[in-house]
Length: 280
Image 1 (cartoon, helix red, strand yellow):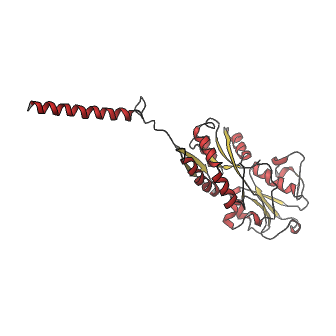
Image 2: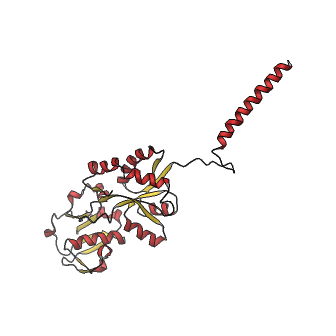
Image 3: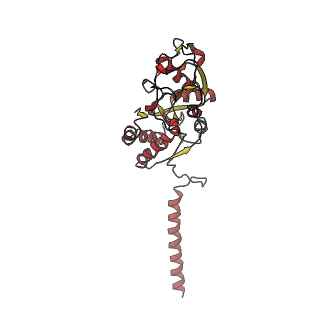
């Protein structure tokens, strides 16, 4: 009887020690305070673009090879993705070009930087009623973006096509106040990027500037434009942005590498070539 009890006691001790050994291994994933220090392998990326969703899905397959998962955080405007990143609520965003990001940094004391340029969108001007520059009437309305960087881009295109003349030296930084010659007597209507597409069908609107991303909802592509922008060396490339404090982190390095992969390039060329051009 005693031998049995001793044996039971030894068995219990072995089981206990085994449990302690397992607990010891588990403790490797906790810190001194007892909280979990499980490695974070999810890269969160905020965006408002349908194109970004498609690209991030392909990039995720590349990131998974290195043990990471890319998760898109969908937003519905052109402010929230920067606010989330500036507040460190996401790891990165993918929805804007560098001039737009720089304007945000100035206005909101931001510290955002470009991690990877991804694609150039084929932007230009569209008209419901006119097919060529020569047909454009005098005195019609022209819809342009109301934010500084995109308005400057739109006006630079009009200047390049000879439809207006901007003050010397303003380049991409012009505003409607910098127009010094307007031979067609256009009236400029300044709208948020998200509202430009709806202006296309408005009466009296002879020209509307826009991105292909926003034009899909009204059934247009860059092939329908009266004229498109002349390439400008990726100055307005839609890019992945990160915070200055994590730009060199492993997460951002994996994200940048995955999104500039050959698989993403192939998608841009073969599936989105009518609207987008790879910038890497």
